[in-house]
Length: 382
Image 1 (cartoon, rainbow, N blue to C red):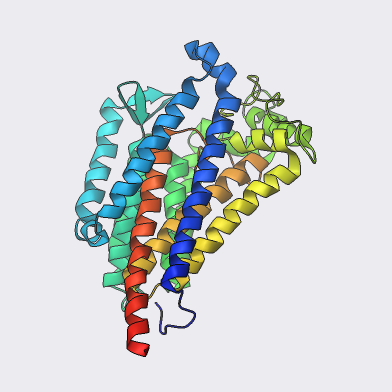
Image 2 (image 1 turned 60 degrees about the vertical axis):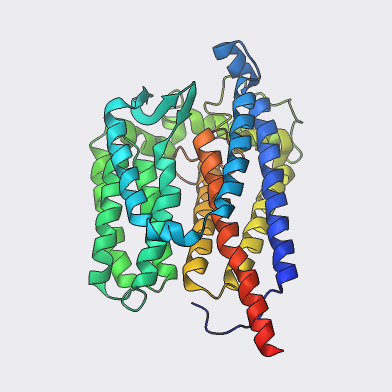
């Protein structure tokens, strides 16, 4: 995707950028771990008699994520590319098996339970569907503007959507459709072809929402939460109350009230609302600013990458992180309908945190080769 070596990052600067990104992610994770304990201690005490139960698990997830991060650095990204199709189809099969033997909670089967820990297989799509798409578009980059080139990929996206909608998890299906559309658009797919997918997706989403009352109530609760303040609109209203109580400067760390069994999922999907309540407007904007700095530094590395395959990995990882941040904060603010999507490196959740560290490892792995490219280029220019 790069035609020239303009604005190349020096190897030393690249190393500094990568180190800065890693330290920033560690900072976000440590802050998230603190907020998980702060927002879940009472709920944990009520359900497990241990106020630090979720904090302890999150710390274990953090350590496991770090271990897998460093292991990912040791694996050649070409290995993922060579076996992307096999890994993806294995993940889809696991998702279908999950429908039969998975743990059922809240009317959905989305988790396997092992040794007291829940694992959500759909998180693996962030690794293997990403690698499959990268390999697919790079192999067909000269044909990506033709409609027939997108059909096989569309079939794969359809299989993924069916496997997660049956759980049921419509939100995850819509996330991957959106991600795939943006990813293809970045790789110069024709807009009219993507528009066709958008129209078909909207029609299917309309029927899936209309024919399932709980989904329809979620949409009506989003449009007018005060029409049903004790059911469909309850979570959004409590989130808005948290924002209102936080005001400009916040009520202070540990002083929030919405975590006292008012706001559901306070330590998972709506943890940003607790942050807004306790740290206020400026604290919330500060956290958003940290994410923006993180994305800026990651984009800076991706922009200077000269290998199309590795650059696509970098852009795909950035896009996953970016969409998750936008959707999570947007949901807590009431900009989007309620969707169970955690805030990266902040929300409680082992599968999400571990997979995000693997994605970070992929990002560092793919960008690490740039040091060799840059050194080679400088040698030729000398």
